[in-house]
Image (tube, rainbow, N blue to C red; front, top):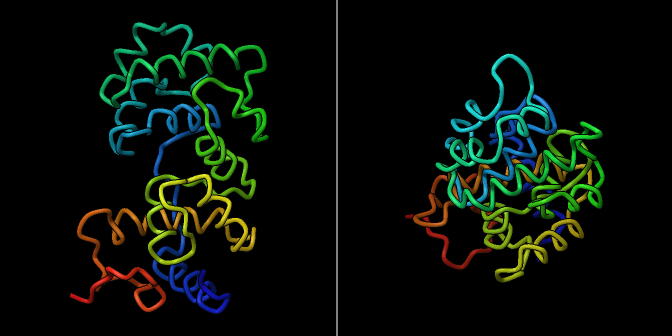
Length: 213
């Protein structure tokens, strides 16, 4: 694992590279964010944002009632371009039914993961990006970056990556740093052909395959 000095250097440099990272999924309330994150599995945020402009009402934020009124067939037709549309439709409709009575998305991890199709990553994205509760959602980009630069050593286990990051990184950095890892993984530390020469944390990175070329 990296030293505290190296960790602080990484945080400082990513702050400079991504000073104000914005959530990539468009949303106006917690329910829209929840559904957008569900749809984002194995799909680009750009595609999800295109789909949600049709799934969500234009003039007001989406509610469970709006989704239930659309009905399963129409929802499935709309979300089809995001892939895995059968499972995603089931999750979207299930969340709408579960939240119809209260109309409010819960903020606690325990309550969020009880919702259909909602796992730890989805729940923590909602916690971090809407409720501003310290969380460290680990998607494929965060997992890759954390393991490459030496902040985690978890193989393919994302839950282990989450535990290692939370144990190492002070809680006050969790929300912003998870977003910075996300953008860094998309723009520079890509899965294929990473742009190592342009990496702002090249000197701190412990990845043995990094290259200056």
